[in-house]
Structures are given as structure tokens and as C-alpha cells.
Amino acid sequence: MLFNQPEFILLFIALLIGLAVVKSPVLRRRMLLAASWYFYAYWDWRLLGLLIASTFVNYLIALGIGAAGSSVGRRKTLLVASVVYNLGLLGLFKYFNFFVESLGWILGPLGLRVGTLDIVLPIGISFYTFQAMAYVIDVHRGLIQPCRDFFNFALFIAFFPQLVAGPIVRATDLLPQLQLDVRLSWHDVFLGFRQFTIGLFKKLFIADRLAGFVDQVFANAGVFDGAST
Image (cartoon, rainbow, N blue to C red; front, side, top):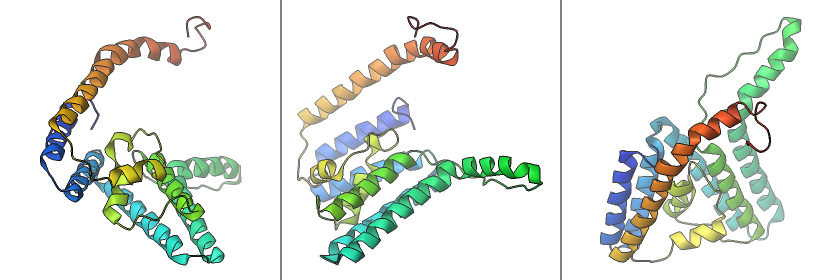
């Protein structure tokens, strides 16, 4: 689901109206989380399980670091576990076949074959993996207390405006905002929708129109001089 598709626009409008109507801040956060998970699952529902699993693992590790108190050894062990898990997850889906193919190129002359895995690169895995790992590191450093509400933490990881295209957001910046009891007014809804409309206009009528020219230049970079690029 792209931001300029009718499905997303309808979801965005419905979410804005819902956030303005619902009074409970807890329910509003749950609505945001449900919309974010739906947005991600729209690409491939099977990948949602991986996102939730990664969220849950880092949530538990951060709680463990918080519960470890002054136990330096235990805190460091949990931090290492988070780094190994997150980088291992990223390496499996993003770089495993690359390394296997490189190994196959080396072992090929010896008559040895190494098979690759038929796996799909999950959308946004780099963003949410590094964001979760950065959160655990911040908890370990004492920059932020571990979030005890799993759904609030899940919203921090899966927040749809930056889930699939970034940027990576620090927990110290976003988590406190998600936990605020803020009531949207209809004026806020109007301002948000206006901002979205301006961005959509720039995407459809400026960026997409220039993309054809820009793509040709980048596809044939050796042909054009510096002034052209």
C-alpha cells in the first residue's frame, strides 16, 4: 500500500476522523497500532508476524535490562543478546543469500555447491530492526526507562508514517509523545489532512513528472556530464 493509493487515503481519512471522535487516549493509541499493523500487513500479511515477534523480543529484553538494576553482567548479556538477535535477523533476510552466493563462487572450482534460501526481504526490516536495537541500547545506557506497555512499544516500532521508509526515530523522541494524553480537535484534523494533501500534490504532480527524466540520467550516468546530472 503506497501513500498515494486510494486504499491508503481512505484509511488515513478514517483514522483521522476516528482519532478526533474517540475520547480515550488508550483507545486512540490502539487504533493507531491497528492501522499501522494493517498498513504493514497489506504488503504481505505473513511478514506482520515477523514484525510482531521482533517487537516482542526487544520489549522483553528491555524489561530484563530494567529489572537487572545494577547487575552490570546481566545488563551487558541482555544487550549483547539484543544486538545478536537484531543483526542476525537482518543478516538472515538481507545478506544471507549474498554471502552464500559469494561462498559458492569460491567453492565452485572445488566442485562444491551451496544452495540459497528462497526468502523475501521484508519491507522496512532495516528501519524497525535498528530502531528496536537503538531503543534497547538507550535503555541500557539509562537514557530512557523501559516501556512496560507492550502495545505502546509496538506502536513506537510500527508507527506507519516512518515504518517502511524511515527515518529511524529515537525512543527518547517518539515514545513520550505517543504516551501523551492529547485530544485532537477538528482543526487539527483539517491541518493534518491539508499537510497530507500538499505532500500528495508534490508527489503526483512534481516528483512523478520529474522521475522519468531523472531515471534516464541515473540509468545512463556514464553518458551524461556533470552539468547534466
